[in-house]
Image 1 (spheres, rainbow, N blue to C red):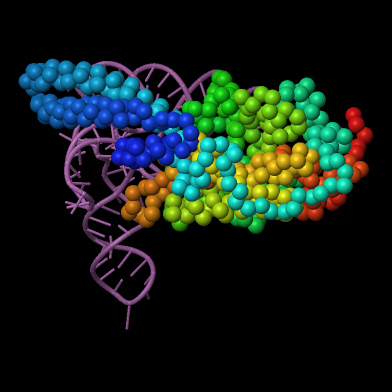
Image 2 (cartoon, rainbow, N blue to C red):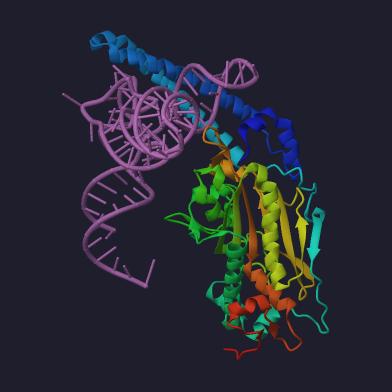
Length: 427
RNA sequence: GGAGAGAUGGCCGAGUAGGUCGAAGGCGCUCGCCUGCUAAGCGAGUAUACUGGGAAACCGGUAUCGAGGGUUCGAAUCCCUCUCUCUCCGCCA
C-alpha cells in the first residue's frame, strides 16, 4: 500500500511512476474519494465533539427533567452522526479498495521497460558446460532414472503434480537441508518453520489479496489459504508489531512447500517440474531499516547466488524492468539458471525489495529511538532457492552420457555420500 | 466435538447498580536531581491512528479497553455475533 499523504500531495508524480509498469491509469478517482472522505470526517467529528461536551453537561445535571431538552437535542445529533458514519464507511471502503489494488512504486533504480524483453543483464556466473552428446531435458532423465514419476503424480492429484521417488525424493530433501544449513550457519539467518496455510489478513499484508485471489488455493469453512510462498507467513510474523531499531535487520530463512493455482498459464511448461501446483522452496526474508534496504537486497541476492555457486550451476542475474516487477515489489533481481536440456536460462530465484509497501499494509514498524515516532520497516525476500528447479538444474547440468547424474560435491554429505544417481529398476 | 474461564496501555494488573476513564497502581523506559563508582532515593514524562491549524516546535478534534454490530444523550462497563487464549472431558498424529 502506498502512503495516502504522499499520493495526495504528489498525485501526478505518483501516477507517472506507476505508469512505468504499463497499464494504468492507477489513481483515477483517488482525489474525489479522498476529498469526500475528509469532508465527511470533519463534519461527523465536529458533531461528535458537540455530543461529547453536551453529554458531560447532562451528566452533571442532577435533576433529569432539566436535561430533557438536551437529551432530545442530542438524540437528533446522534441520528445525524449515524447517517454520516454510514456514508463515511462506504467511502472509506471504496478508498481502501482502491489503495489496496494499487501496486508499489518502482524504485528509481529499476530499469524502465515494458516486458521481460527489457530486463537488464547485471552479471553472469559460470560457463555452460558443453556436451559431447545430446543433453536431455530433466523429465526424460527423471523418468529414465525412475526418480520422477509424472504419471502417478497426475493420478494422485492431477496435472502439475509429481511423485518423487528414491534418490529423487532424497535429492530434494538433501537440497532443502543444504540450503537451510548454508543460510543459517554461514549467512546468519534464523530458521523458522511457519504454517503452510494462513488467514486472509496475512495474505493481504504481503499483497496477494485482494487482487490475486485467483492465483491461490483457498480452503472454505474454515477459510484458509495455502501459501504460494513462505514470504507470506514469514513476513507476517511481525505484522502489527513495532520492532526495535537495534534488532534490525531481522533475517529469517524458511523451508516451505508452495501452492499455486497457475491460473492463466494453461499450456505453458506442461512438461516436467518447472511449473507445479506444489513445489518446495527455501526462502530468505529480511526486515530492514529503510536506509539499509538497498544494500540488504544486494546481500540477500548474493546469498541466493551462493547456493548456485556452491552447486556449480551456471546462472545469470537479471534486473527486472518496471513492466515486469511484481505487484508489491519496487526492485527485483531474478536469478536464472542455465538448463542445457532445454537450452535456455530459467528463473530459479527472485529477490525483491518491497520498500515500505508491505510494512505499511501489514503494520510492521520500528522506532529510530525511544522517543521517535514509529516508521515502517522495509521488507525484502528472495528464493534461496526454488528447490524443484534446483533439482532440475542438477539433473540437466550434471547428466552423463550413460544417463546417470553426478551429484555436486557439496551435496554428497546430504546424500549419504553417493556420487551419482544411476538407473534403478522401475516399479 | 462437549463443559467452563478469560481477552484492558511495552509488560503486570485495577476498574461491571453505564457518566468527569485514554483509563488507578506497579514494573519497565526517557529526561533531570542527588550520591566521588554501583545500588537505592527524589521529581517530571512515557500509546497509536486519522483529522484540522501551523514553516516548524506544537496546539485542537475524533476514534481505539480482542473484532464487528446493537441499546443509550452517554458504554471498558449492558445485549448479540465472531475470533483467539486457558482449564476439564472426548478424539487423535
